Image (cartoon, rainbow, N blue to C red; front, side, top):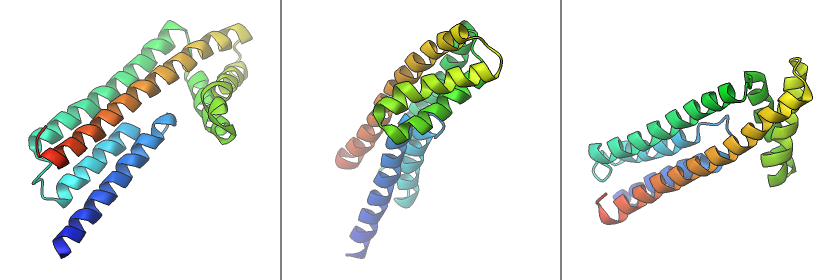
Length: 168
């Protein structure tokens, strides 16, 4: 009876960590995909890698690394393309965080726009530049969030499939 309770506790703790990772995708300053990976890894450790084996961890690690790498490189590329600055991104992130206190519209649209424009203006840029940067920030943030959410759901789905069937 005790091993089943321990197995259930490990699974529930793992699922809770992965759920936190999935929810944190909407906050760009939180490491959402690595948290989901960590949940799967902790399950593997807790179960002595009996179900989640090295091959599965390699697959999940490649998904996580590729997603984080592409998220970072597309952000840098977008900043260079639209002549954005780290100030604009910082403003968008902080604006999104503050905006999230006022609902989804505040988190995804109003907060990042206001934050980016204000921070670009504080840095000495004109309004047009701040708004041009913000257009990329909003599109990039929403696109990146959708991609990370899709990959996060795929990682969790693969994990659950592995647990239920024992195969990838």
